[in-house]
Image (cartoon, rainbow, N blue to C red; front, top):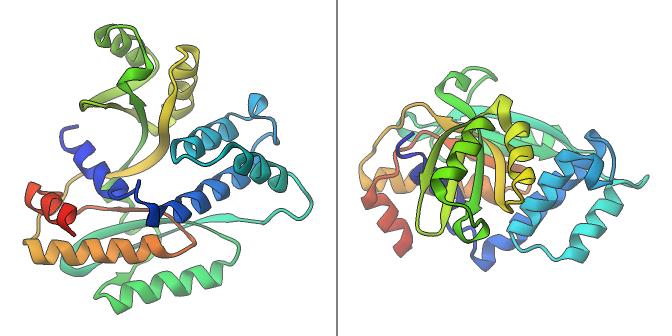
Length: 252
């Protein structure tokens, strides 16, 4: 799965910056709300989806009291009613986009996504038209300092838990599973007492398209416009993240 971590870094680039934190918190609160309402209630011990949402909220440094308020509100009579909707389309130069949203007003979200596409040289497609371009994978990120066993021993245990591949950096290990093994891997890591920095289902492009630098930067600006929309939870796309583009983005 070479290159997938680099691709994943596109989605998470600048994620730690203060200007992104409010959006990260909004996403985390929506995830908590959906997990409480669609899962088995507000008790994390009985609701694996909520445990995952809480872990991800902690991963973006959401305060404990904010998490607790979100859970309490989600379990109350006045909780927001969200639904998950997805959109597929093309940006400039034939770059495919798959967009996941969580919204309380589908009509508003459809209009907003269509507008972002059309104003930036893209077009909204029909659902299912581009799904074949992406593999749905479970992606887990753990910090190296969070476990004590030798890496080789850990990987063997994770393979038993459904791991298909690993990507390593100095600070993190990224674990990839088939999406059907997402829950199994979450349980495996929990049983190993390994704290997860982030875990989610991602749509990873089967093939990526490389563009000239200036064209690629326009695609990344389009990504930013989608991610700035309050209803958008995740943006996936099949642009190749070259070293040149990565360096240019770091400079912006």
